[in-house]
Image (tube, rainbow, N blue to C red; front, side):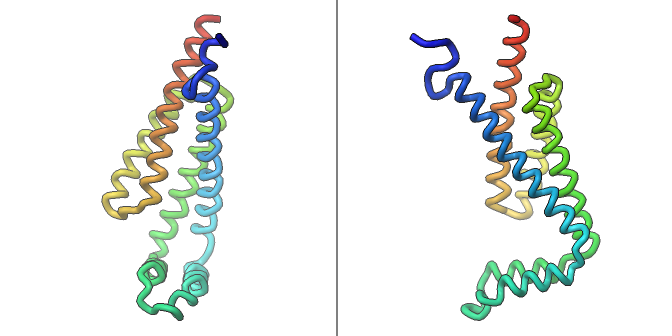
Length: 167
């Protein structure tokens, strides 16, 4: 009939693969956050403005009232140096912490699991708070991924603990 835990869509093997896949997504996002954080912190605001103007020039040529292009340009024009530095440091710290946790989870060190659950829950709480201001769909998608990661992390933790206690 097959080995226990290996059959069905939600068998242990598939859940473990899904766990590793979501951790891979988190690692990619973490690396992107680290790069974005360093760039945001180090690149002068005038370069962000030049980039925003370059990116939106075709949109403004077609429609000077384009909502997204105007939002992007307005945001960059009103970005203070302090806000830029905060965003850079936040992205860098967020990315480094996530990458560190993902590495520990992939190495299956049991103490990383409860720490990760708490940290990811704190990230979700902060993202929910930020959503009340930004109403960003991207923030909702990242939060949904974090919720899935928490559920899979909890499952993986209980599975690994039971396997190790049985051995």
